[in-house]
Length: 393
Image (tube, rainbow, N blue to C red):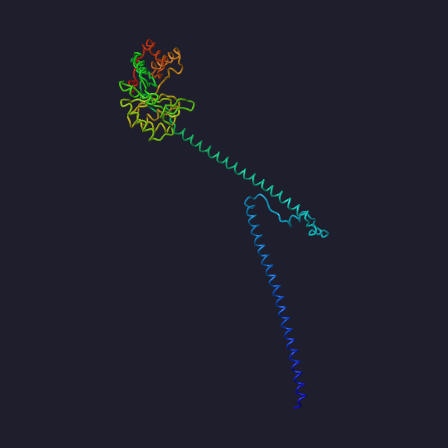
């Protein structure tokens, strides 16, 4: 073979190889560039999509939360900015609303939004106040219903005194017998008072106050008497001043009342009868009187109703606990005047003549004791007796 031809052929082959390499390099370069560009756009698009989705999720959550709050109140509806602009900008083809989306219009939107929020807040506050007022009225209504129910139960539980029959009611006065007059002097607490009462000249029932720091010896003073009563302090109206220590209250438990009665039994071992000192509130109360009579029965006491209230329920519980029902007819010294006291004494005498007996209550005032001592001549048609000698007992 010709050496020159071989050499020439080798050169051509080398040139062809170089051209191929260049083409391959260019192709690889282009392919790589294209891949990089494509990857960039894909990643950018994905990021945008991700951000958009995140924004949408957050916006959806916020909108849901907002709508939930507003829906619960059911007071208003929200508007988006684009809805607002749709309303304020004319909807014709000659008007490009996007060119009018200016700062001024945006400011107008914000002002309206703030105005709407203020109105919404006012509505919320108003609604809350309405709900509070409704609740208050409902509570008042419930309390009124309870009060009415309680009053109805109280009225139902009350029994007409005339329907309660005791030995007192069945007593028939024999007019051939001399009418009996019981005079009780309450609030006795000193030896001087006791001696003055004993010097009146006819039987007077003394009712002693329980011992307190202001009259420590009241129980001791009563011990030598053949007959006496205990003047038992009980709750009066709020208008009464000067309440005794350990006055029974309608809120006292049975244990408190029983302990008080037990103490009275220890102080006054020979006493059988007890009447109420004040007690207009206590003697009206069903529950309190039930507790009292239960305790009195246990310690062998008999209750005498001073009747400081016309609504006293003493008769009902005297019947329930099988005690004699004893109740006063008149007070003789509400007016501390000689003539007035004597007239009340005359009234008690007239009652005794009609029904065969009467009970009058007074107090150890000097004027009261003087009237009683100076009025013996008025008693010629009646027989003064102690309370335990009442004809129906």
